[in-house]
Amino acid sequence: MTYTLGMAGRTLTALTGLGLCVAAWASPAGAQENFEIQVYGSETVAPGSTMVELHSNVAAEGSRRTENGVLRTQGAFHETLEITQGIASWFETGLYVFTSIQPDTSWEWVGTHIRPRVRAPESWELPVGLSLSAELGYQRRAFSTDAWTLELRPIIDRQWGRWYVAINPTLERAIKGESVDRGFEFSPAAKVSYNATPTVAIGLEYYGSLGRVTHFDRPRDQQHQLFPVIDLDLGPRWEFNAGIGFGLTPSTDRLIVKMILGYRFNWAGGAGR
Image 1 (cartoon, helix red, strand yellow):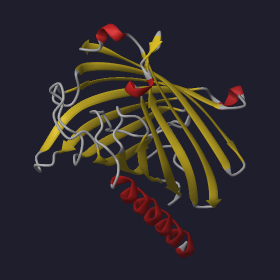
Image 2: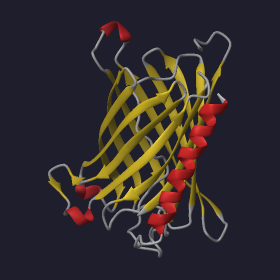
Image 3: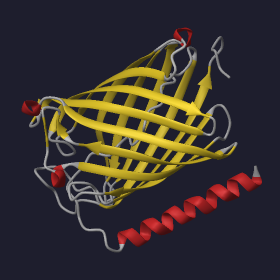
């Protein structure tokens, strides 16, 4: 374990150094909502268990001024509390509380989302993991031009030996706000990782926002991010993911550092591991 954690520390140090080099030339980007940056796997939380996660990220190079009433992202720390309750072997429900620590040190509540999710039972013996989440939520006008939004996220994943692949072809739409007329928009996410050791996986995550499903935005108006990431296996109850994201278009925050830390509580009678 000592060797594994040392390797993880060196990997994170290398990623951070690379990120600081990029920050030296990265240009300002348009405002973007980055409160929960994660590619979902198909597995759901077991019944009788509760997963508590803290999603933390900061835009080292992002938007530098208020745009259309939305606060700048550069220098703002986004802290999201996610609590997911396992209800059945095929069903869970998650609750998100989004907050933002602004550069002036004020801590702001951003909004709250709820996310039920179902998965294909293992008895179906599918060649891939398969699940579907639906996320409904509210966010304040200072952080989004849309007050109420809906997200539909199909999740497909598979493990091949040391390799893991997950694809989230996500559809999002505004229910109340300035983007209602745009209908559903396509925001895909994907992940590829490799288990370098039994407890350390290194990988690459992709996040995009291409625009309306009926007519994609111009390439410069789309959002595309790549995150070199590291995942640590700290035990069956823990989850740890960290990475540095690089924006590839002018509409994307150019440099984001993120971390996810989670712990699962197994209650009396729960099906914990």
